[in-house]
Length: 467
Image (cartoon, rainbow, N blue to C red; front, side, top):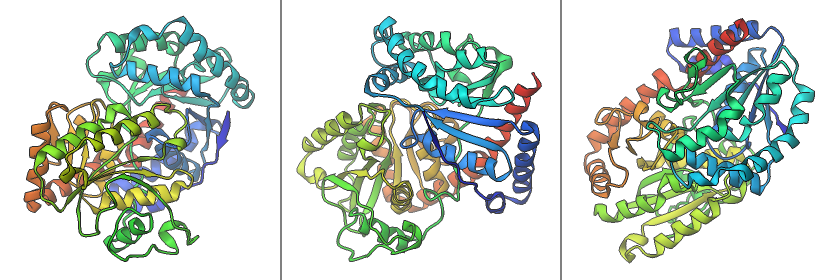
């Protein structure tokens, strides 16, 4: 188990982005969190420090708490390939997918093997007056030993399924023996919580984004073009990357691996999906829908994911990327020439975030055609950038987007005709795209910035300590 450093993030800077009353409430909440913890430490334990929504969310949220004087620390599990293969199977089961028979005694033994190796590091550092927040299935097995040591523990699930099925029930039964004694359970949506979760210990806290983080901070179109040209993601513009500022001041160019079609010209209109290389994100379906939509020739699809070697807790990433590339090869030549698969480097997270920010801001349409989705932080990011989003009507996306008001929802993710129709509407109607995008930004400002998550988390900590 290793610790990830948390850098303070200035409270006043975020407060200045928020409406006046909302900003004041945010600063007051941060101060209250420090008073409530009264010298105790808030520990967070997750599977990885890079790749995925949890790894992106924690540095920002904990940074604001740290700036307020809260002792907030972040630990990452020391896992190996067999462990992450087991937890990936568990992850898919909770989403209602996979083979429910593959979560038996052998998987419990593999799961416990790695967590028992991590546990001594954690127990040496945590004190009785501290709180521990364990994130997702990978860390859940640490909970019983922490409770036995007299520590207050909350377990947070960033995934789930609205309607239980055989696979999801099996996934939750696998986890129940580990998490049953938690002082608090945190879910993104109330529908995700199994019926056996006690109502008085259930908290609903949607994830959030930091508008001042490199992935979300405002940058001009000209800078976006320079960043992407420097990363090899735009061609034919002659633009050069900035030597400072956006790329951290080092002058080094980030590089992204582009497979499929070559990088489009800077004048192309981009349809973009940003996600892990994960079967639940349905990248082949996005390509098929784009191919069937009959879009103008100046529209280019860009599927963007992390360099698979940099995401340690997802052993399927390389396989899914290879499968997606095979699907690209099967596309008609006229479409394949307008579809790129982009792997963004993970060795410099600031550069990674800046590249993604630039891609989303240059996009004409952002899509998220997931088969299942716990929440969808990439949807939130695009909405904050006032982009029209076409997304599946699944999971937490349903809470973020009201179709025809601040985005377009596809009721059935497998309905390629509906997906293609939504793309055609936005390609042809700039006024609709702008209206949806502006309403989307307002939605995020109201509900999905860090002040909202901090407020709910502080309420939960106060309740845990009071009990």
